[in-house]
Image (tube, rainbow, N blue to C red; front, side, top):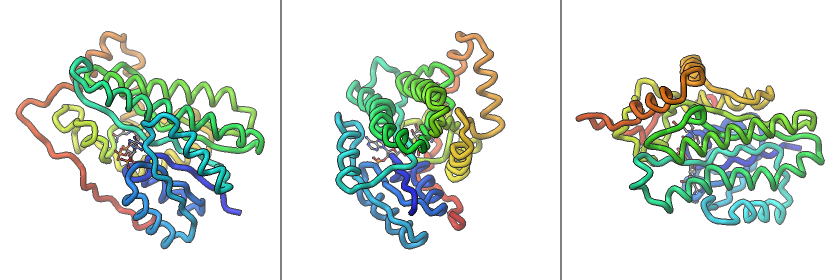
Length: 277
Ligand SMILES: NC(=O)c1ccc[n+]([C@@H]2O[C@H](COP(=O)([O-])OP(=O)(O)OC[C@H]3O[C@@H](n4cnc5c(N)ncnc54)[C@H](OP(=O)(O)O)[C@@H]3O)[C@@H](O)[C@H]2O)c1
């Protein structure tokens, strides 16, 4: 019997790539996000190409009880989740004081609370079966504070620390927990976070989401606790960990500040090779 993977935020970017990779590896899928059209198009494409089954659950993870609603659908349809990819998330660029509070709260709901809830709901059955895998998508942002994206950076620090703790708690249970910490990656994230004017967006230094998702897949399979894809990202993170905190927060401020006189376009239409996967 085929195993089943649940992927949150499967409608675009990294989530979409994870869906293709797991389908290629002959997993059935449960695809979760808000955009029904995009999820249905992905389901059609994947089922046609890989002959696996993809279930679509349209859900706003910013809503209270979203995870419980997803869990109810799974129970009603007798779907057992072998692998959980907690990938859904978004950021918001700007000073906290002038930010929209509802958006900050939604970010905490999606990036943190839905991830904790889905993990809590799906873990008992994994433990009973002495088998299961959970990949939590954190970020390089997790390793320092993030002036001008304060709630986002803090949310990713939560995901990193939560995942590491679970990795340790569950290490003799047959369950793998991995935190994936990508650097800037070519998805709709920059557009959705209004990062077009931030200096942190440089098209040249941005990773291919397919490569990041493949790396995440392999590191999860090899039970790695924390993965930072890419040599330069590993070096930047190591330097940031060694630097005094005042220096690393000033460096992030400098990195996030608005680009002067330049308005680079965002990679809304990204184009990468999906022939093999
Ligand atoms: N791109 C980067 O540079 C980068 C770097 C480090 C970490 N990350 C992390 O990678 C993860 C994936 O992001 P991405 O880069 O692939 O960006 P993306 O292309 O914007 O994808 C974000 C996904 O999250 C889903 N999502 C957002 N809000 C949601 C909500 N309220 N309810 C349900 N689903 C929601 C979106 O689906 P709908 O809009 O259809 O709901 C979409 O599928 C995020 O956790 C992000 O923080 C990204």
